[in-house]
Image (cartoon, rainbow, N blue to C red; front, side, top):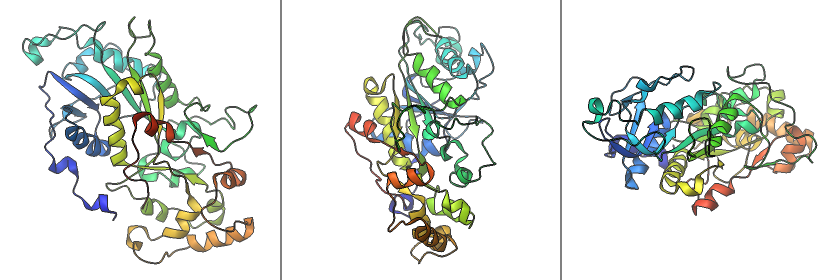
Length: 366
């Protein structure tokens, strides 16, 4: 285990300010799970009041189950507190779903229902409430990559071509075929029109006046995450599940990671300085590029049990053979080498960290 994973979950040991009955919080998490174990304690350290939801409720959470297909379900949002920033953790794939969520939340802020939930607290009207909305997304919109799959199959799914997430669309071969091919992707790069990407675009469109929800602009932003690790999510475990198939390994190229702590730090930074984030889609990485040949050769197939031991299993040998066959003299391969061999794309993750004056706390993967 790495040093950060040896620490107990901050979510369990840190008193985090959250209360279903609070009239107002600085940061409201819609959804929780793994992400909240980083966001909530870091928000508390930053002095932000928080609340979070789960489908079942309990454990300090607010019961909330969003149906993206259901119109005019304002009542589902009544139990939620007013918030300066709403962080949408769960993905929204359905057409019109993101507008329904934002509209439902803002309309539920009207005075109807105040006596039932907040005594005599007066809420701002939908047309006036200044709430920021952040949607967590995936860098998979640029290449239909592994971050579109359930996290437990993060790498496996990327290399089993016949198995796709149920919400996948067929990816265009090249979103912008007339431009010179480059391995590098940043926030301005073209992306595939997948349902998740369309929802992100719809959210960002709410930043303009006379949008789909109201006449007044709504402050919105999207944070695109790459391969998540930490607190039980292990890169070594992912690699151990890869098949020892030479043809599969041959196609493996670049991959990017970000530790959950840095995801939490990014969410808190956006909540504290939303003017910087507003109206934009941001890529979040640890500012490194990783070669799956290099990781497979270095970690082997033993998963966590192989930590502090020489690499075992078929992967190191397969990688060595492929290096000879392709003329790769050393690992890791460069972004350009991987792009030439199999079209791998490489994320330029500098913009977010530069904009907020931060650097990753976990600039490695283990």
